[in-house]
Image 1 (spheres, helix red, strand yellow):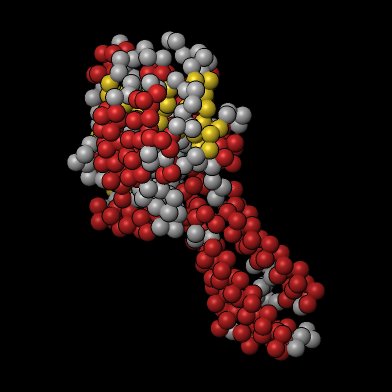
Image 2 (image 1 turned 180 degrees about the vertical axis):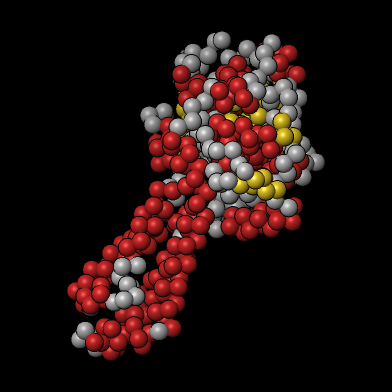
Length: 435
C-alpha cells in the first residue's frame, strides 16, 4: 500500500468518522490536513494536525475550492449532517459543495474518496439520503478519480449519532426500549472503514462504489443486545417495544428541538432510516479485496469498553432531563418572583432597602432568571448558560448572606435549594461542551 508521503485533505475531519480516518491516514504515513469549520473544535479533537479552516456552505463553486486544494493528491470527504437546522444545510453540504469539489478535483487531477451512506438513492425517503445521492452522482459526472464508500452502521471506540443512541438505549436499567426491533442492520467497524479509505487513497482498491457492511444482517434487537453485552450492562429483564405512533411523536419533538440547535439522533431522518433498515451488498468490496469485513461480535471483540463509556452513555441518557430541569427551575424562579413581587420586595425592604429599589431589584433579577431558563434551551448557548447560572446563583448566595442572613434559617430553605441547582448546572456544563 503506497500511502506514505501522500498529501491528503480530509473534509469533516473532527467528526466521528473524519477524526478516525484522519488519525489512521496519518499513522500510515500520509501527510494529512484537516478541513474544519471550527478551528477551536479542530484543535480539541485533532491536536497538532494542520488545519484549513473553511465552510462547505461557502464552497459552492469550483473556484471556491482552488485555494484549499493546492498541493493535495487526494481529498477524503467525511463531512455530513443528519438534517437541516440552524447550522446545517443538507443541499449545500451534501450536493452543491461536493459537486463543485468534484469539478475542481477533476481539473487538478486530484483523487476523491467520498464517504456516502447505505441507502443514498435519488428516490430515498429522506432528504439526507437524497442529497447524499445527488452528491455521489455529481462526483461521478465530474470525471474525477473517484471511490464512493457506503458504510453501514459504523461502530467505533468513540460514539456519535446512531452509535451514541445504541449506547444510550442500553444504559436504561432493567428495561430495553426499542423501536423497529426486527429492522435488518449491517454494521461496519471503524478499523475496517479506515482501511477501506486507506486502500482507496493508495489506489490499491479499484475505482467504484462499495458498500462497507458485514456479510450477514442482524435485527436491531440483536444489535442492541450485542451492544449491551459489550457495554457490560446487565441483561434487560423486559423489552419495551415503542409503538410507531410514539416513535413518530418522539421524532417530531426531536425535529422541533433541532430548530433550537439540538442535533438529536432521534430526529425524523434517523428514525426513517432505521425503519427502512441498513442493508447493503458486501460482495463488490469482498471481491475487490479478497476479504470480508468483521461481523458485529468481532468488531466489539476488538474494542475496549471502560468505565468512561458506561458513564458517557448514562449521562447522555440523563442530559435531556437535566437541561429540562434546569430550564424549568430558572423559569419558575423568575416567574414566581414576578407573581410574588411584593412579598419578595418586602424581604429587601425589611433589610433597610427603599421599596422602589427593592421592587426594581426583584424585577431585574426575575427577568435574569427567565433569560437563563430560556438560554439553556438554545443549544449554541447552553454550556455558557450553565456557567451564567452558577455565577448568578453565587451572587444570590453572597448578596442574601449579607442582606438577609436569616434566610439561611428559613424552614423552607430558599438559599439551601440554590446549592443543588448550582451543582446540577456544574454537572450539565461538561455534558454540553461541543465535541
